[in-house]
Each structure stands twice: as C-alpha cells, then as structure tokens.
Image 1: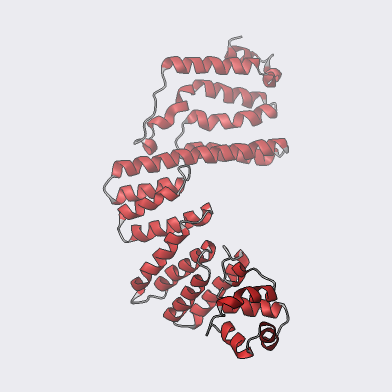
Image 2 (image 1 turned 45 degrees about the vertical axis):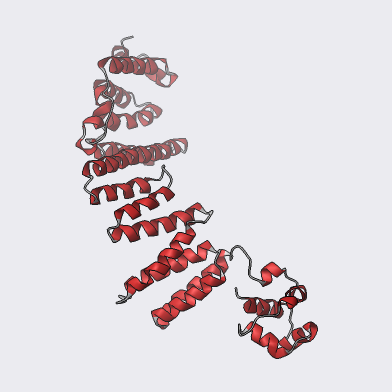
Length: 344
C-alpha cells in the first residue's frame, strides 16, 4: 500500500478530517490532501509524528508489512477480474503492476495476478500477447522465493508449462526441482519431457512406474475403506467394495491371486464356510500369479526381481501355517475339506 493510502486509511480509522490532521502536525490541509492522493510525500521529519498521531508504527506507515492477508489479496484479485471485463487489457495490466509494486512481498497476490494475466492474455486472443511474457514470468519466478510450498509449486508448474508449451524443454525441466520427489506430478511431467525429446524408453518407464504406484495407492485406499465398512458391519457396501478391489487388480493386470484374495476377510467374517474354502483353495492354487504383473505388457519397461520356486514354496508354507494357526478360521476346523486343504 502506498504511503498516501496508508495515511488516508488510518486517518479515517481515527475519525480525523484532513484539516484536523494538518492542524496537529503543523502543516496545511492541502498538504495532507496531496499526500493521500500520491502527489507528494511527507517530509522525512514528519514520518514519526504522523505514525504517532495515527497510532501505527513507521514500518506500517512506510508499507513494510511482509504480507497482505489472503482476504485483502483476494479483494484485489476480484477487482482485477472485474476490470478485465470492462477495460482494455493493457490498462488493467498497468493497474495490476502498480498493485504488485505496492505489495512486492505478497507472494500469494503475485501468483494470482500473474495467473490472471497469463490466462486472460491468451483467452482474449491478443495479437501482442507475447509482449507480456517477461513480466509474467518474472512474477512467477519471484514467487519461487516463497516459504509456502503450495504457492511455490504452483509458480513452478506455471513456469514448467510455459517453457514446455514453447518447446523449451531443458528450461521446463529445471522447474521440476521445485516438486518433491514423492509428488507423482513431478514424474509425470518428467515423462512428458522425455517423450518430447526422443527418450521414449525413459518416458515409458516413468509412466509405468506411475501406473504401478497408482495401483498400490488405490488398492490401499480401497482396502482401508473395506476395513471401515467391516467395522461398521455394513456388509452390503463391503461386498461392493470387494468387487471394486477385484476389478482394480484385473484392470491393472496384477494377476489372479490379487483378484481372489480381497474377498477372503469378508467371507471369513461372515463365517461362510463354502466361500472361505473356495477362496483359500484358489489362492493356494494360483500362488504363482502373485507376481503376474511382472510379465504384464503394462509394466514391460520396468525391472522386477524374478520370484524363485524356493520363495514360492516358502510363501505357500507360510500361508498354510497362517491359516492353520489363526483362530479366525476355527469355525472350519472340523470341516474335512479344510483339513485336507491344509494337510492337517
């Protein structure tokens, strides 16, 4: 906020007229009027008296506040959008530049103003849209200094797409560093650059890794929902969720074992002997398919460690031992098929 606007705001907050303020400071009313309209600045010797009179610090008077509140920034953004609907683009652009000069440290405002300028210049089909590139990019780059990770990554994303869409892939790649390693968007954007720069094998591998991780994340989330439904004894929805989990495994080609096993907990909870036995029998019969995804064309560019026969045998023995020792399955202990299946 310019010093004149600060003086006007706090003078009105104190219910002082320009004449009353001038009288207390020993200046003329027109002098106060000129300060508030931005025509002149107060003499340096008057800064402390003005601050004391308005009951503010000299930092506030000189607009050294670090940030606007989000609400205040949003009001400026809303005004910018309204102006763009009624005024020529370049006039609003100059107005927006002035607002950002008043609040150079408000990264939130800078980001949103840059976004508005960036999108509107293209949507309005300006013939000279590129002349605003330098200023808009400069705004985004200033926002990269923000301590707020969300704001910073939004600016980095805007910069990434600007350079990517202009086929400046090396520059676009530089902004991936602003995304965390765990953010799947970083990997997806990297894949886009690989595909545009002839590194197709790398692109395939990145996208396949995203598919693989995506299945794991979705599967765990749906399993957690299933657990919640079982705790709530909502068996109708639990059956629906089991079906969805099975479809998910089928869609991502994770193999028959992963398609069969999700139904086991529900069948066991319901003490459905026939269904529980059927599921366990199929799980044991299809144990080798537990790594079927390693042979799927969906993941053909990824490297997987091959499961040995010894490992599969050990896994089978551990499963059987787990079934035998788990009291959850006590309702089956007299069932001949159960006894035969577990070899006990």
